Image 1 (spheres, one colour):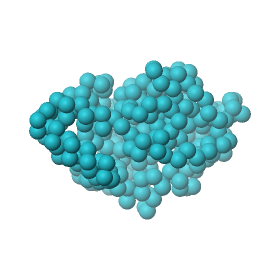
Image 2: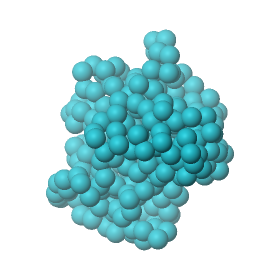
Image 3: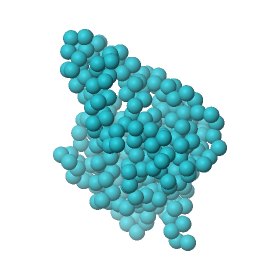
Image 4: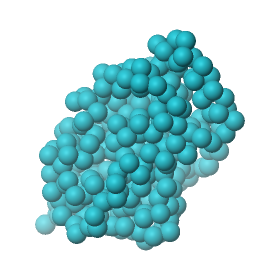
Amino acid sequence: MSQIQQPHPPHQSRPAVERFYAQGRVLQGLRAGLDLLQRHAPLQAARLALRLFDTPLPPRLLQPRPSMAPWQGLTLPFETRRLQLWHRPDGAKRPRVLLLHGWGGQAAQMRGLAQACWDAGLSPHVLDWPAHGRSSGTRTDIAQWQRALQVLTVEQGPWLGIAAHSIGALAAAHGVARGLPVQRLALLACSAPPRMLLEGFVASFGLGLAVRDRLRQALEARARPGLAGFEPAWLGQHLQLPVLLVHDRQDRAAPAACSEALAAALPRARLQLTDGLGHRRLLDDAAVQRQVATWLAEAAQADKT
């Protein structure tokens, strides 16, 4: 286990969520509407709040779609939707690794890391999560992401390892803890668990106890084994493989305390803290890309010895 500094108080992640939902006139209008609705119809307010909680922002249809060349798209049926996976057909004989972006992101954010993995002798497969990038849908949740991981692994795996960012990192950690077969994990800017994200969401919209409790009940019903399964304590009991955590000290979207707490709970964690990269530029840093690619490729080398 890595030697780390004392974690910052976990409640520091709440202002980041509140800042996110404070942006834009549309969200300000939604806050005003939810405030009015919860006073007169709390059940309807909870339903509207849940729809908003499940909606990635900014919506995928409003995001630019940069080219993924030389990676080619592969469309996979999933539930009533389709998943978009990116890969290189000429890497069929290489060990496969899965790269996962975060909430509100898209596969294109992982191109630099994908290239680093390719240069390390791996075959990276980059996923657009449901309701993100070129996958279909407008709403999703972390429970659906778990199902997507299972389907993807059956159809395109097995994976030597997984590298994932933000909420995608949390989803990957939970999936592996529940039995998804991989040899190594790399978690970049891992987010706070859903319990804390919900607290920040509720605070940002000024939602009352009645609406908050209905939201929590809905999220608990979806997740197995409940929201506790995304907490560091639960993950620490169920993740026994080597895990690399990379996080920037100046990350304002998911404070470094998130990875510090998780590293402290995991038996085989290595924590690397950076400075000045923030939440998303961490993915574009060449040194970080090489470190993650090397970490994953080491598992392939171990298989050969």
